[in-house]
Image: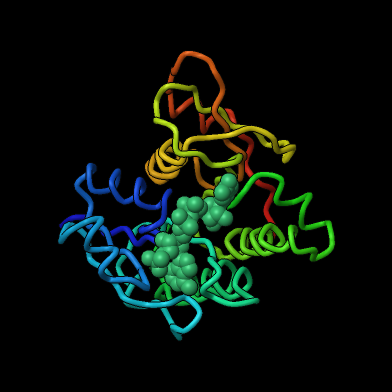
Length: 228
Ligand SMILES: NC(=O)c1ccc[n+]([C@@H]2O[C@H](COP(=O)([O-])OP(=O)(O)OC[C@H]3O[C@@H](n4cnc5c(N)ncnc54)[C@H](OP(=O)(O)O)[C@@H]3O)[C@@H](O)[C@H]2O)c1
């Protein structure tokens, strides 16, 4: 039987590349979306679409039950109100984690953001807010007891993937850009490598010839210290 991968934010500008890459691997993909028509337009009938708004759903059992992986590339937009970053990014992830049946091994790959830790130390200014909630969401994932990988990209752009090298850092210094499709590739590769588990890292594009040894990419990262 094909593995099932659940995706949050699968209809987004980054998430749609994640879904495409999962489909290329021949996996069964389950996507949550508030907008069935948008999901169908993007993916036709090649994915299972679960209709739901992260702010409103009580649980996400229909999304995560039976999933070997949960790839989360969701992010709040203005339609979710003033507390959107809290309710979509953070509480949404909490609901997803809570809905994973006891004993089910699900590797979580979470799309966060670079400089998230530094920003969380700043007060809840308007600019700081999304990153503040992303940092708390990282904590949730790290403490969930599930295997996880946290990917913190630089500023996202829509340039073509593959023209620049993808690098990883663990300095939380920020700076730099990365193509959304490259971030999607990092997320989909992370779910396939044992040595990507338990790791949190920033990722950027740099102008060096592409050389993608994914095993080396993940091996060179240090594992997070245990939190619980
Ligand atoms: N922009 C940057 O430079 C940058 C840098 C680093 C990290 N990030 C982060 O990267 C992530 C992805 O960015 P992106 O530009 O690809 O995002 P995007 O195109 O805005 O996509 C957002 C996704 O989140 C889903 N979503 C939003 N609100 C939802 C809700 N209430 N319930 C269910 N799903 C909801 C949307 O699904 P539906 O509309 O189908 O419901 C959509 O699939 C975001 O979290 C962003 O903060 C961005």
